[in-house]
Image (cartoon, rainbow, N blue to C red; front, side, top):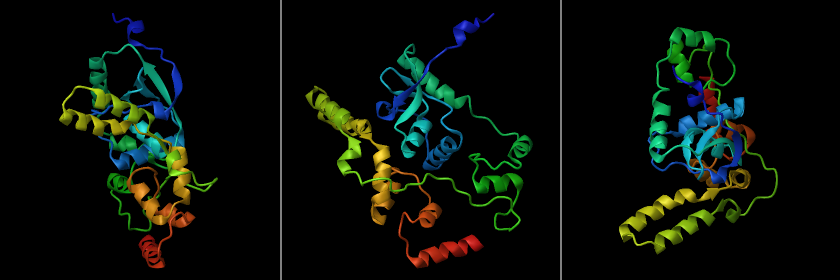
Length: 256
């Protein structure tokens, strides 16, 4: 008989500064931008219910998607469980297993029952819902619309200086160690590129900077995934200035 005490870990959930959390550079699980935006919307709607699993050095074991979503939301802290009893091999195996065992198909009929009348965020896109219900989104009677739930960025204070948006301390320290090492120059160049992941971004100030920025800067910040925003919210709340012609085109699309 299996001893449950050997399988159950009673780990304490702690609030950890996001700048002290480091993604695993070889994480094999991909997190496309669309997924990160969905995770961010889930956190915004239902709060941060599932902690990130990190080791004593702050490196992520599982929860990379939640980490990137928390950054996009401008969170300064994240809930985390710190694990100190796993070997490097254990961590690698758990990262893969944690994602692999979650893969399964939906029971579509039960899924429809659960989704029926649900107004809360579910993570399903309109085209996915239309395919599930075999509906045409262009039809007026379609139950689904182009609802988008994205964070809003409002001016709340003075625009921060660019130097306040990030910290190079860990990055520069690592660069010094790389330069002082005896590895090859080719290896040094590789390590220097990898060291950029130790740049720490202050997403709270980044959001404030974005709210003050020019339309061109806002667009580049969005493409750099420094903020999350959608075009409908941008037009509605005036965060970006768009020519009337473009706004009219979007209005016509909404009427289709």
